[in-house]
Image (tube, rainbow, N blue to C red; front, side, top):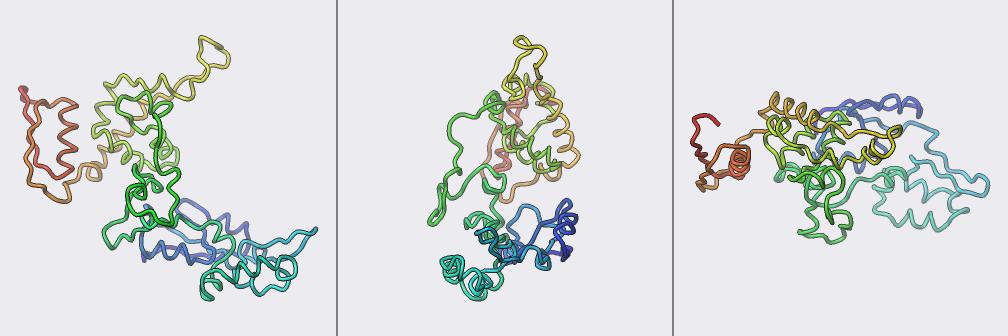
Length: 299
């Protein structure tokens, strides 16, 4: 496991105050610690905030005819609680049927509800062959659709129909909404990775593209010609892409990497314009040896 800060606040207010950028909550830990050991998450937490020492999260009581169970109550405590056995005996029996005594002694009600995705593609250990950048981690593909999907729900794993909004107006089908979400979260690196899936030269295209996507922006639900008082304008996506492209060029080592393996295939690309260079980029990324021919001395 990698290093991280570990804190054990005594109140909910203290726990909330510890949740800064890069921090995660830990209930029982049986799920989170396994994820950290296998390094399956795209980002490793800088701090783990344990909720174990907060008394107000462990209450089990009947109030106004309703059973209240604190989020940090363990499955073992549910099984052994006389209050639970008296008020809702089926709940005590259900808790006793879960997993093993060791897990029941650690696993909490809140932790079980917040348990991360159990799909084995999502949880593929990094040390075996590298974590899978699946759709649930912001990737473009749900591997359970084509691979072994026993015990897994794949509803929502496939993008159906035509792209809507701005992405539908982009001839390249750039996933604008996804990279804008990353930018709003301050994650420029992830935003650039999404963009580079379909476009390796944002610094150029952002300055020459007609940006037809802006005509389909969700912010333009009311056009100025219809109601000037309530009219809105589209996101200036070309300026966003310029900033994103400039960021990528400042960190080009992360986006213009040598292929992991060579295929031994030689490919010729005629024309060093945007289309030719884009084709060359993805062919080289796939491991092919690429030669670009152009009549001009400079591309």
